[in-house]
Image (cartoon, rainbow, N blue to C red; front, side):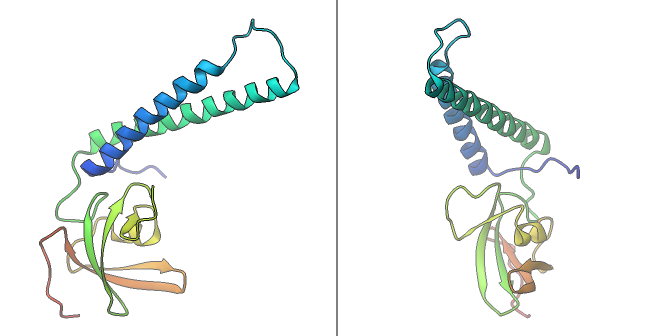
Length: 162
């Protein structure tokens, strides 16, 4: 399903740019190990290694294309919205059981950061486009749950009246 290009935070942009640089370095390293078509033919193990490196090169090329496309789309989308939840937003939410958590909406989960909610997770998808005071519902492991957007960033908090 086609969607509008999503903006990303400056931190997410920097992470993607670093990943792109790392991927290009790794690609150069793998590419340098591939033999040319006119090189000596080795045994089956050598051929298997060569095929594995070729597969690695394709995987790296695919990821380089994905990251480059994502960065280009983010440029077209402009900065993250300030009055509603978007990728890169810091959001304080109050869940149906009364617990309150502050999370950041991220592009992808790179590390096990308990405060990071990916934009494509059930909670992340539910929060996108909403603002303080809005109630959202999402699928949780124990069934459908709801949450109220308390605030975005450091300000714009709403009252705590249920």
